Image 1 (cartoon, rainbow, N blue to C red):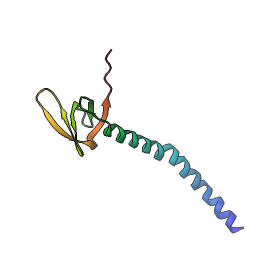
Image 2: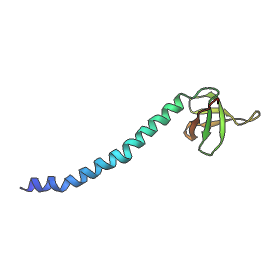
Image 3: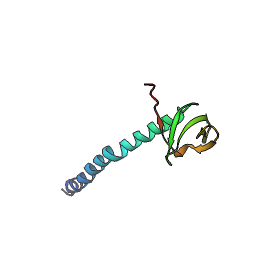
Image 4: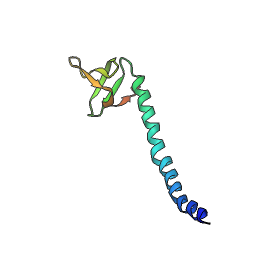
Length: 92
């Protein structure tokens, strides 16, 4: 009889964890995987936005950094962890 009460008292915690997992943890893991895939697929000529809001063009992807061109004269190296997203350029 005690075992039944113990399982019944843990059931709400298990349900809360399941809800938390499917609403918070799982979508965040999917987003991290998509971001890592995007970073690994960056190529020369891609347009990106950094976390600081700079819009730049990829010159050369390296292991830890990405060489980017801010304008015709300025080329800098940006850490991969500061790349926010890739801009899809439409030729319309």
